[in-house]
Image (cartoon, rainbow, N blue to C red; front, side):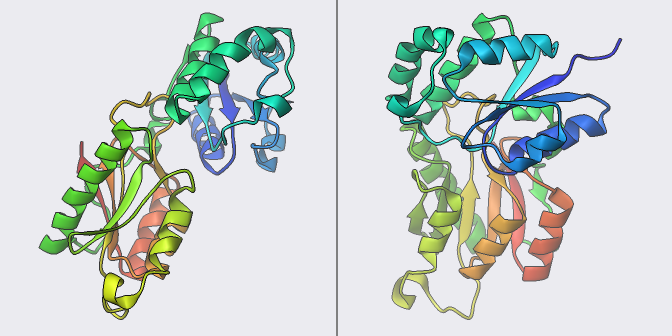
Length: 278
């Protein structure tokens, strides 16, 4: 029996596309619900419909018409300006709950959206279930091994990320020789890494030697169906550009887009890449 199409509620970035491609590789069709102002043009190459975040009734009708029973929410979604969101009748009814959730943080907002769709009879799945091939494996993934000093930085950075995550702040940190260089907040990982490059040498250390580690891990309390941390080729390039020694992620708790290319880029640029069991 042929599986029903996988429904993808798509925000911005490469993750929704990676999930769609992974599903297609397994022979499963997809239907993309593309969020206006967030999703990218790639959705035009798939069965899709564009909607506003507030068009809840339309979303439900379209998904049912496409015979979708399983949904994954993926991609970047900025906290909406609710006074600018187009609402249909069902969206008006859902708005108070969603607005209240948004005020509690990104995790609460995403959980609220998933719970809304589940009340309508859809099964919400995570990126890991929809595209398990994207999950980071445990262990070193390239040629370069982290040193003992790197491992100490990794351990500290994981503690920092999990402490921040409990407060719904961010999913990433950079540590060098036991010193916290940067933590991620609303600006995102790329902007956080760029800040490291602006630090003076007496804080950052000798520019000619690679030092410091970027760590990404999920928040302890987050709904893993909605928002696992992600790295890709550009993450490796950004880390190399500011002189970091490597990247560590939580094994099976983070997604790697185009892993082969990511590992090749890390090897080329001389960075380690490691998955640390959670």
